[in-house]
Amino acid sequence: MTRILQVAGPDDPAIREAASLLCAGGLVAFPTETVYGLGADGLDPEAVARIYAAKGRPATNPVILHVDGLASARALTSRWPVEATALAERFWPGPLTLVLPASEQVPAIVRAGGPTVALRCPAHPVAQALIKAVGRPLAAPSANRSQHLSPTLAEHVASSLGEAVDLILDGGPTEAGLESTILDLSGARPRILRPGPVAPAELAALLGAVDLWKGAVKLGETQAAPGMAERHYAPRARLELVVPGSGLPANSARTAYVAFGQLPPLPDSIRGILLPLDAEAVGTRLFALLHELDDAGFECVVMERPPEDEAWMAVRDRLRRASAKESV
Ligand code: AMP
Ligand code: MG
Image: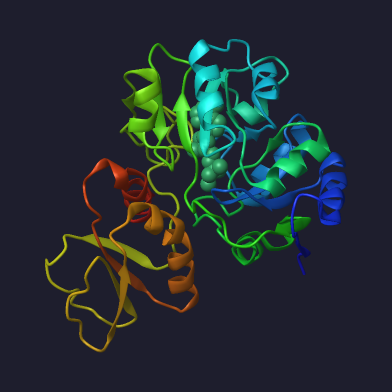
């Protein structure tokens, strides 16, 4: 059985135990304010290799390093533009990841062989205490098998990764529920690689213009921006996105219908689920809901397309990827 320890706060003795495991090259899953991370010593290539093995993550997909603040982040880069300071001061600790040219200290496996490193200072008190206790950056991608749903509860980690993880710190449900916004500052213009809880408008307010990377690559191809595989975050159930009011699915066996704001009339055979017309609340709840529907044995989840405005960008991104067809 995977060991799960409840953590009440940053002073909990479980954090010391987790830190010793990490210092010895082990894997510890821990809560952040976005989703649960699968942590390893980010400067130890063998420990980071265990993350890739546990997740079944392609070697082409780099991992984010989690740090305790701006100074530690800066030490891991070879160039730190002024915008990085402004962004870190405004959004850290918090759900914003910055991609910057890496210093030689960053192992190749963390960068997937590329020239850049992704850095974030998480806001969750348990994550912060753990990084401080280890005294080194923690590599920590989401604590799930590659391409599967991200974990927002300790139980999700246990069922996805099982014995592959040495210890899970259980800090309850995560707050944001969606992975961090990733902003690439290594090129000529700032570019969002992954939409997330920090909205483009918030970044643009500070940076002036910000580009949005809209492309996606098929798995197996060399990734233009690493980790941007089209199918990602997927539940076991087939997920179909439909235009609201466009009619009901023909095959209703083991089907759930998810609507925003208002549920249409449904036959008894279809389970209706109503989510609020509130992008932040839906972001917090989305992965947990898909986990629950998987656990309840639903084969098909029909979900109405969320609104087109910017507030829903991160939710739309995850749903698009979760509903993408498996590539061959
Ligand atoms: P996750 O596994 O959910 O934590 O995802 C981490 C994300 O960060 C993936 O989409 C990675 O591709 C992305 N990432 C990590 N390092 C880099 C980097 N150096 N450049 C661009 N994206 C990165
Ligand atoms: Mg992930």
